[in-house]
Image (cartoon, rainbow, N blue to C red; front, side, top):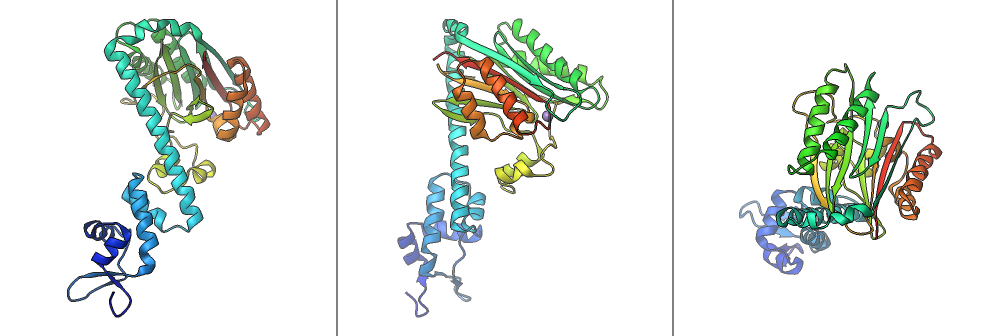
Length: 349
Ligand code: MN
């Protein structure tokens, strides 16, 4: 220890279990500044009181948190930092679940297992419901549920309703006639064809979130800020990311998810099916498990109801039909400021 009570980088490294190389990097990235840098030699010195922060950085690294995000977290007071760690961990779990389902779906695809599992299809039950809500004059939302497909579309602009129903009918046709090209290609083709129709509707567009299944294989197409959720083992996961301005700020760490929910620009979409060329749906593959419950919902539900409440309704319903009616009632009980579209599919346990 120096005469000013500071530790050398070597001593501090041993106590904090961070390497001197890591400490130099964290200094450069402003995660952990030394208490003093020797003007002549450039040697870094640390105060013993910096040890808790150094240990926090080390733990967050072990958790897999990116350095830029750690920089934000270590500047927060402990309770706010704890909340950030919980948000980060929930994101990790969601991403892990997504990758596991994707890996399973790819295995099905590569080994041809899905065809052997088509008996699974008859054990899926579904329902959809759309409602004007309590404030809007017209309903421009579309909800659909049928064999092998759930879809919701939230239209906007003078012909928003037509835009939404165009994309849903294109999806229905595509899924009904999907052959060997597979579900993701069928969904992508349908969204592209509907885009050409929407291009003819001036100043109008729509979001689209669709879930198609064949056996245990699921394909998800998503564009805009309607959402898809999965209830599995009693836990609700959101399996889509909003293509919205506020979500992009959350991803950059500039807004918390809670701030995004009340942000004045929360309805501003970065991507939607608006007929502009090059607009493509985001596609993903998943694999369903017995007992899974899937829900698609427009922002008329998601913007007013808490995820816990949505999860509770989805878990408590015995049939998809009851679930969609309860969810519409939930949005209306919260004031029903927007049109509401919900579609649910329950895989038998
Ligand atoms: Mn809406």
